[in-house]
Image (cartoon, rainbow, N blue to C red):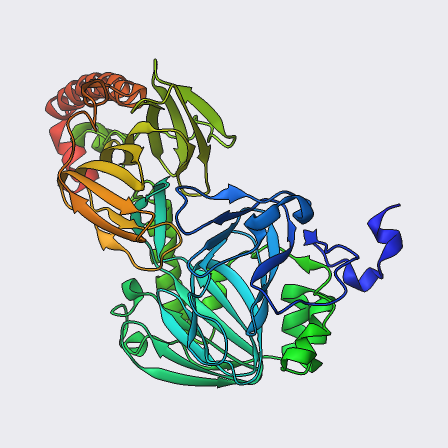
Length: 503
């Protein structure tokens, strides 16, 4: 029988939905566990090296769905989860979210959930000393219904089990309070704000704070909304029951689950985050965000010159990346040959298995490349037209509880972050190795072992480099011919041309 025949039409919100099993008649807050999922949801247990996928039937997931402090949860595209944190809260998690389970739970200690990206809705038991921390803000709550929607400040180009490698991008955290009260403390400026029911604002990431004086405290202006309308739009009609649910342990235990929740994060989240700012500032910030995240070709708004003038000056060569198709499906590489792929945004990678692995499993993401299984080496280039803006080589292998990512940064600025963590750090130039220990949850830079970046990776010439060099050579030769012809025309009739071009 189709789902549409079983559920009221109001519950079938437009877009993607996820459902919860009919047997889930109440929330169990005696444990911290995932109670329902849709799509691809993964968990990384504290001492494990990689995220593991939960079975679509949670009954077959065993202990993986039961979470401990420090475990990390990730939802992929078109995926979602509903969870319970012991004696503290229930939460719904939309697609492309990553967060860390609080290490302490209950009323006697501060429970701090660290959220890296995505959107999460919380219903917290009154009296719980609960905080949500992102890279931008710390949200302290007591007995409330609220949401954090995080636009990541970090664009991940390559992720190994031990390290995310990427660049910084404009972002921030939007906090919407549907019920109760939330106190916000900006992570960089230390400034505070208090939000009440029907109030919202955004805490901006560090790259935006110095953009304009109005942003120096780190917050956008306060804005108001209708709680029921926005909650229903973002989390479905089933979530409206949380508005009237008693914020006590017994009250939440009687809640039957959210039902059908749209999982998609939505479009134009960056624009929505800036609501309340004046239009010129919004346009400038949008331009910065678009350029930073696309890292594509810079287009000059110069006056159009006549063709002869262009020939005299010599047209700048600009490479056309539109002919490349972005890799979208997971793939396997062997230890024998490099595979080269286009990742979008003028980014290319060459990769193969290494470090004792005969094969490695890789997956393209919205921003870059994810190593799912095995040891591998990479050569990565992100172009600003004909020259790389970012260029590095990397190698990954596991040694016991150490997850070792070696990096040779050749060009540009790179930053690193432990998968699921909210803090990032600058990656030093040259050849370095980052060791993340799964037992301690800590990482450090150490001396790079011989062969971590093999010689054949350093020697490998990418096909994109050969193509750019070949087409630029042809362009330069044609340009020289045009310049010679143009000079001849100038010599033949200089007065007319000088008057025409106003030299």
